[in-house]
Length: 264
Image (cartoon, rainbow, N blue to C red; front, side, top):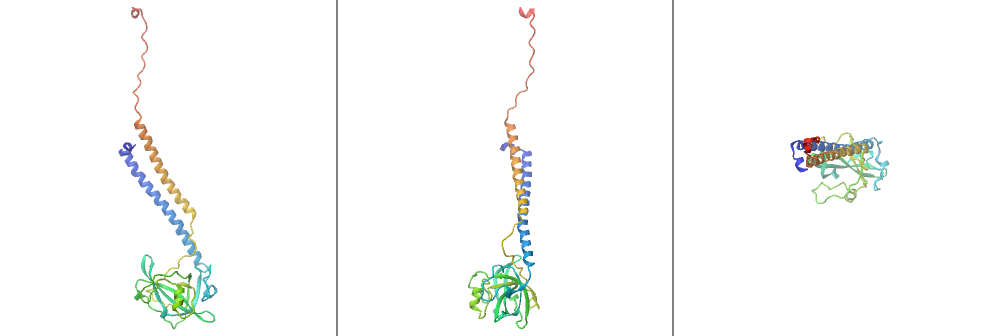
């Protein structure tokens, strides 16, 4: 079969098969990617379409994070506390590595003021973070998020490994929310334009559009079928090449008639 496969015609067919299989594989992977990206986009749209509520309706200072609080749009009003601003290093935005700029907002939680960490944006250099005016009352809308796990220690002054509210509560002398927000809008605008907005993540389980998964599996089946048909045709051709050719049959001669001369 190898000898047959090395013939020019079969080598050309093999090259065509490789192109077809690679194309089918890429189409299948593309459909699988579409299945997750479409679900993520739909989840993001659903998350953003939820009504915005005051943050105190979902969580109070010193209380645990609500089970359904992640990803909820919230509104908060207060004043920035730039003296407690910090940077979170090793964060990515559109493939670029840099820092989250986190500044707490002092809010009126009813009986007392409380601090709510706010991710104001992203910078590639600490010098670009700036500090907002603490004398102006600011109205914010953003996406509520639970506190992060503890991050690495031993960082330069003004940096923290994560937004760990338990660690912040030990350092700050004021009540703190066990949550933070990704800022979406700020009125008035107190954040420097060099600080890029950080898109809120999509919380919850990752969804899958099964229709696109089915399309992807179909392309993989087509690729496998193309390989099967090539091997089948190659096997048949090789078997025909090994079958010995039968010599052409000669016509049978009719027996000569018996005559008196032959009898003699």
